[in-house]
Length: 246
Ligand code: IPE
Ligand code: IPE
Ligand code: MG
Image (cartoon, rainbow, N blue to C red; front, side):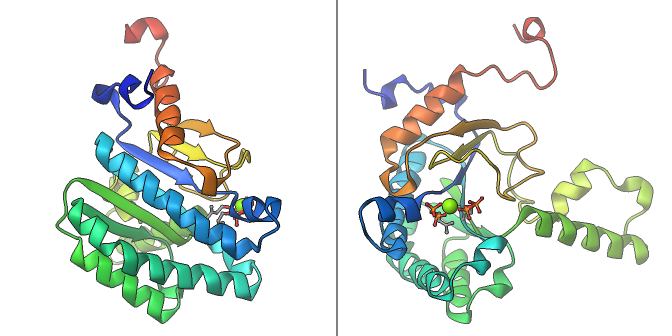
């Protein structure tokens, strides 16, 4: 049976987050430079964005560059930043045509000026789009995000803008970079690695995890459908018993 048709559109994850991993290994297997792997990874980004929008997924967050990735060889970091700029320039039209809003989370100030400017421009141009929210995690680290949140809330307490007693989970949510997004329902990681690598630690508290050995440049719409079908087989109990749910 067609995979897409076996997806129940009434119980779609509201927020899918993806750790797009395996570009380097994909290239190495083919005797190519790592950077060629990254270039080919952009095709999978396009496929995934398109597939999510077509299905009616409301939020898609892609881990594109971590705070730790700054420690990679300079030439690889430069290529990734150039690729970011060229992809943004290339995809703006598709985002507009498909009514997709682009946002970004992370230490965006640390991006090269050109990349930062291009990013802000696309964010501004697509801000009123409604069909899907596509968030790029760039220079993103969850511990940095949490640290930043603690500092912002502490400053408000110090200046009597908020009282200590009023701090609850929703206050924390409102100060995270992801303040406008719901919790992650489905977290996908490609390339066979089974770790979180400092991604959305707070937001994945009750996410379903899906690990696939497929390397990111080989990830297709069909791979995404498989992940969603697997997600729909899970019973999300949120601490309750199975009997309570039925
Ligand atoms: C993911 O692919 C892309 C980024 C982290 C930017 P990798 O570059 O990590 O690929 P592997 O893990 O070395 O195969
Ligand atoms: C995580 O991948 C970051 C992104 C996908 C952008 P890495 O390949 O950097 O993760 P580790 O270091 O192997 O855990
Ligand atoms: Mg990797």
